[in-house]
Image (cartoon, rainbow, N blue to C red; front, side):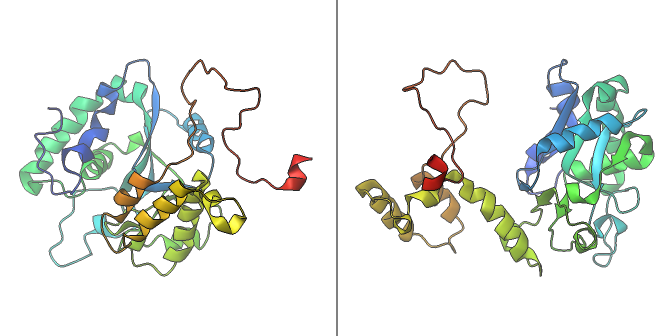
Length: 278
């Protein structure tokens, strides 16, 4: 009910507005949170991002990277009317939220009043929560802390993120914020796609291949036959493939009383050769 009343043209529907409600919906003892879209690739330790909370001052409660397209400048097409924003606006694919500060300033009422007023002219949001965050920041710029651009390198169809990564080599987060995701048209997309695939292969499935000299078995042969029946041009290919694959997982993020099967239990090996066993 906190966001379902907002007319929304974004394909994410009501779920794309939920970030606005986190100071209310998360338990009161949680004072800080990092909010990430599901289409981002981390190329660094997330602990580095947590450290940035230490430099927030005063009423700075929202850490964001500048939007890397001209969307909020209103120049993408004729009669394009975006929601109000400060400068180029900000992208909400990566957000630092100081929940304690937002609760103290009455965040839920603040954004709702601003959204209600703006909707009288705009009628609906186009970029879900991002439009409302930007309009609030336009009126209350003391809330925002500008994150360095490498914390949200955006690969949308109209991106100008090259201005960021041409000057900064230490990229932290890649954001596939085009509806085309990995198939986005970008002259450097192959570099970013390879980065994504590198992390994807950490699941260890490559170790099942015969090319490494491991003995094969019927289940692996069956799996490869099933996958060969699908084509990557199929929009549902990834979903069908996931149904057949068995991933290596980190089992113990949460407290758990494990009963080890033996004295030697390896949960994840990224590199292994015979000389390393000696």
